[in-house]
Image (tube, rainbow, N blue to C red):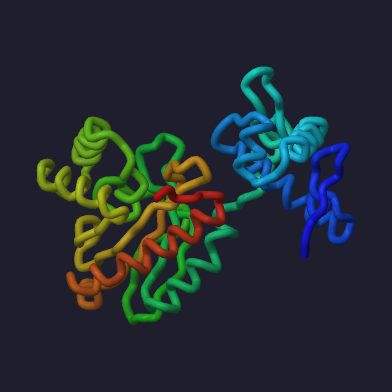
Length: 269
């Protein structure tokens, strides 16, 4: 089908056609919002990026400015507006991480038959606070309970929560946990393992917190990329040899990434 051009506006008929126009205009408006999410763009730049005429890009952007979804800075262009900030804040408030994560945790538990945990940093950033637990199907007892706090440096969940911290912060936290009675560990070996975990996006508990209990953990990120939670799969060492732990990395990371996606996280290549 060919499109004609409106001689007074320069807009093609396909851009102004009424058939399905409401949905089409809505989708184009969303395209404009997404286009300026990462950088400020002029109407000309918007048109080039979205394949629209300049007048159409200007019309869409101006309507979004009127509603507060965009803001326009003279000589710079369009950017996200105050309405988007308010909606983002409301979305963040409504994103109950326990509720969002629960179906993913249940699926991971059914897949592995092991105990699955969800946790966050406590208010003092000194411990891992356990928010949810899916009991395993094996005849073993994982003694953790929802609401408990555990050391950051000797649990898989705790390590995953601090993968993006600096080495100096990690060294200080390790020393504080050791002084507070965490199971003795070699500082240099622990630091090297944390470097490896940070590169791989996962963490292990190699019977460091509880005898004969091992786990594989991974961080959960929010929309800004910050680690806001972590999940783990825990089981007895007899079910968690080195080979199985290595195999579980992809499953645990995949579940953590699915929860992160629910929170608005979009990893960059």
